[in-house]
Length: 124
Image (tube, rainbow, N blue to C red; front, side, top):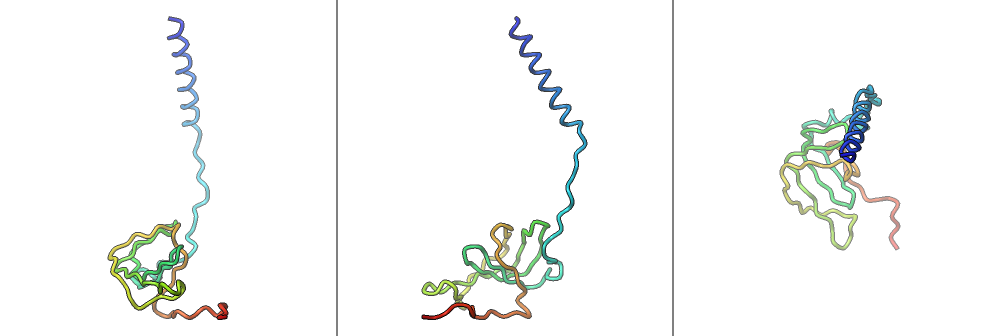
């Protein structure tokens, strides 16, 4: 019987600790603002480059403060197997895509921008 009373006492102590932790007022940190204002690109076609080199274009339908994106009518551009930095005209349709923020490298509008060769690469 003494074992049961010991267990009861331990359980009561644990419950008191839990209640004390729950009674503390929760403080929220400052709200994080998005790094980019993507609202101006909503329902516009954008180009997204991913970590690892893939590139897609699609219509931005939604996003959150963490920079997760929802893209519609997405097309992935294939890379040249001989030159990983060069993209081919060949594409494949992906449809609706949810892009996780950790995989993003760059975001740019399709209208008003163009892809140029890297001026810092020297050919030998």
